[in-house]
Image 1 (cartoon, one colour):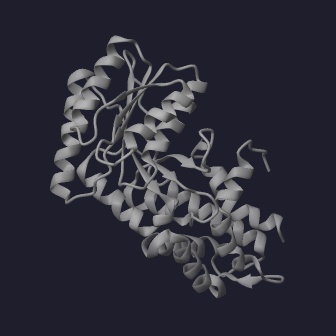
Image 2 (image 1 turned 135 degrees about the vertical axis):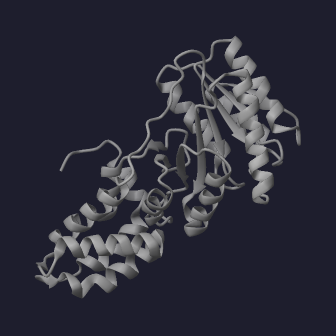
Amino acid sequence: MPLFSDKEEYLNGFAKTKQGLKRLVEIDGETQASNISEDLMITLIESDMGYHTSEKVCKLFLEKAGDSFLDKTQIVYLLKQSMQEIYEAVQDQPIVYSETGPTVYLLVGVNGSGKTTTCAKLAANFQNEGKKILMAAGDTFRAGAVEQLQKWGDRLFVDVVAGKFQQDPSSVLVDACIKAREENYDVLICDTAGRLQNKKNLMAELEKMHRVIDKQIPGAPHNTWLVLDANTGQNGLSQAELFKESTDLTGIILTKIDGTAKGGIVLAIKDKLGIPLRYLGLGEKETDLREFNLDLYLYSILEGLLDEN
């Protein structure tokens, strides 16, 4: 078993999911795979994996197991294989980096998902790589959001372009793009308004943002990432579906994984939408945003079970 620097954070973050799966390894000796299929299906659904993805995992698990009698180590191994195959069925597209000028990240999502804090955490990550960072406070419709990002900027010594309360978010992004381009920033991270209106208005707003950014920095935004609160479970998946219909999402950041969230949503998102998980928010500090690692994720909810038995 390889050692990972983030192993403990992952284990803590997915503690609730692991606890839910624990019943699958509470067996003495061996049991036939078909005898645990119902428990497996229920447990996966309860982990926020959803019926569709849970059914696919169970079917693949039973195909691999056949009529075999399994001990708990074999159960975990086959379940891990099944989940990994489903996640990797659609290959993750790489993050896009601009060859000339700043790389632009547009963060979208509903209010309360943690977008503004995630902007700051991303900035801290890029800062550690030696990048020159600019943030755009485009969430102008939530009271205090602009000030919140400005405080993060002061704390991290990162520049922030801010507009006024209820100012058109696109105009803030235009100003930020001009500054990022003219002052040679490496990265521009754009916070956006978190209004989830009807699909038509959402699409129009996101299209406008993309259009004005591309006009200032051709080819941008290079990455459009949806920020989702992991605690919203299947509701979060519905949000993701709506945003995917409204814009070209290239990644998802799952926030608030602090031991209370149910981690099955990770697999459901990838299975149903084909959108890669980019980062997980595993705590409140600016250093608590971790790149998604499939091996660590599977270890934290599956293999860790065997360590406790």
